[in-house]
Image 1 (tube, rainbow, N blue to C red):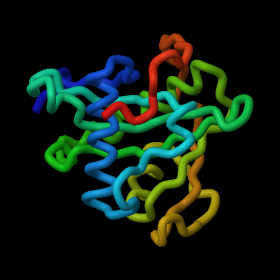
Image 2 (image 1 turned 90 degrees about the vertical axis):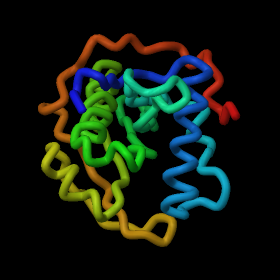
Image 3 (image 1 turned 120 degrees about the vertical axis):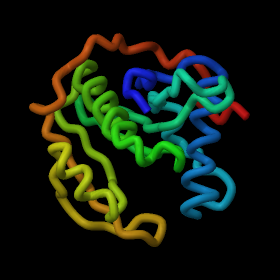
Amino acid sequence: MALHRYSFELAKTSPDLEGYFALRQAIFCQEQGLFDHDDADNLDGVAYPIISIDHDAKPEDRVVGVVRIYEKSPRLWYGGRLGVHPNYRRVGRIGKGLIQKAVTTANTWGCDRFLATVQEQNVRFFQRLHWNSLEEMVLCDRPHHLMEADLAHYPPNSEERPVLSWSVQKVS
């Protein structure tokens, strides 16, 4: 699988938002069992959804990775709900690309700190991407780490910050 067939972008259209929420539900509810039926929460109303798209896939299967970012307070950003479709986890760059897009986008929009709660099994992956563990915690009965990105490794990009005019509430 060539990397050029994948892109990382804000989800803005109804089909992309539907794919974004469907993949989140499949990963966090069905696969991991972290939530009963739906993982949507109040942060979805203020978060910017980011997706990885497989341009060679059928339109209904094109969203292969997800993450969301939101500004918790001025210049303090969080990322969350990072997930990659099981068939794409061995591609090796989808998760990394989503993290890169998330942090560089927040850095462009005014970010002094970028944090995320990361499931314990993914901590080493994040550390290789220049993240530091700040503390250990338990969320949804699972061990997590609060981690912080080293912004020096995530330079700003050219992504303009859109007004949240689309409905990021669950579309389907």
